[in-house]
Image (cartoon, rainbow over all chains, first blue to last red; front, side, top):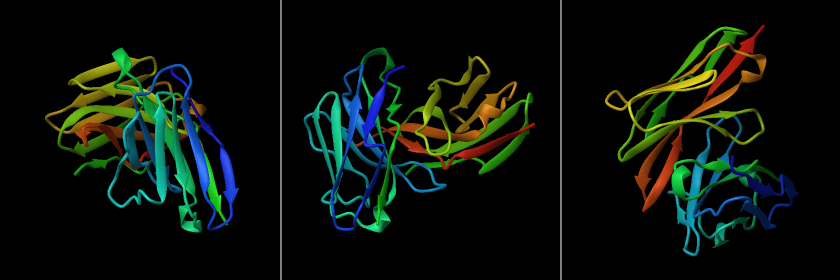
Amino acid sequence: GAVVSQHPSRVICKSGTSVKIECRSLDFQATTMFWYRQFPKQSLMLMATSNEGSKATYEQGVEKDKFLINHASLTLSTLTVTSAHPEDSSFYICSARGGGERSYEQYFGPGTRLTVT
Amino acid sequence: GQNIDQPTEMTATEGAIVQINCTYQTSGFNGLFWYQQHAGEAPTFLSYNVLDGLEEKGRFSSFLSRSKGYSYLLLKELQMKDSASYLCAVRYSGAGSYQLTFGKGTKLSVIP
């Protein structure tokens, strides 16, 4: 199956700093990428949807000035958590969807565990 | 809006069969997915149904009834490694694209 990578897998940062998370589709071109957040024992919550070359669409309640998403190419999307606070500590997962016959599938990255101290 | 319900937890015995149900209410329905997620890891794709009926893939089968807003995931010959959370997700049309809404997941514990 298709491979999506995320970097870093874990990050610990101090309150007030910014953190950038990268999501890459390794063997296909991702026309659409999604960013999810998952708190312990809860389901995945969609944060935003981004199409290559255009602005991301954020879900209700997600601050677009705090969670900056850039989808500059068909293989790379980045999520920057600006001025992180302890309540932003969570598991962030990206997924990517390509085109063609398997465009219905979303392939998930391995996730990034963010801890803000 | 979208609403997805599935049981919170289930326990089954190694070698047995278990059925995990999922009911949903959504507008713009465009398919139902099942994912497996082990603790601390990202979800992995199990199955996709867009038409009514049963899709079989090895030990896993998934069923969909669009008129009833109902799906189930059937796991046969359970193995200890099947202990995980199983997420039901509905794809719908929104914001000019297709999006997935996830249920809260069913934590399956397989016991010897």
